[in-house]
Length: 210
Image: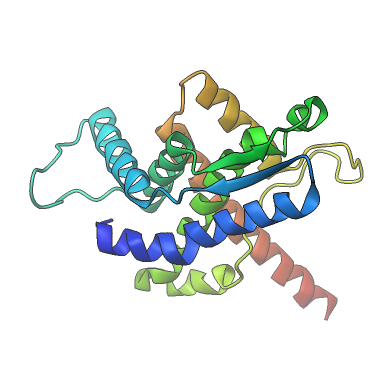
């Protein structure tokens, strides 16, 4: 992903999601406020570093001029997710979260992890819709929402949802300096397939009910 393509993706996806997370937080509490410095170049540079490291892990050559070996979409999503985790564009601009707010897994401590995972899913959807070889799958990805596995007990309001659990796991991995892009790539691969199967199942149920 060259800088021109990335700038467009940043403006249309990353920046909009950053603003949405900040607005949601700042409208819901009074003790602290969030902001972003929108580190476009830093995220792009970190993405290229993650991509290079992925190549090294796979034993693939790192070309100096022309990119003759392309990472698949799930690996690209993993590298983008890791880049955002490393750059951490959202920060506390004023005030400070209370002990109670810090204890909640879906607030400030993991908001960059939530952002990174959300951007990764958006990039995955964009890749599928841009692939002319997968036109038969486009119908499942037309919606801006990607289905993820349900929690074990959906009726339990205290049980953490899948995306919240992922965000918490990414936060702990980042604290331990142990973000694994190959593992992230596998997660995006299985979420890709899960979403498609979920849509097919829903269409089948609808057809049977008619």
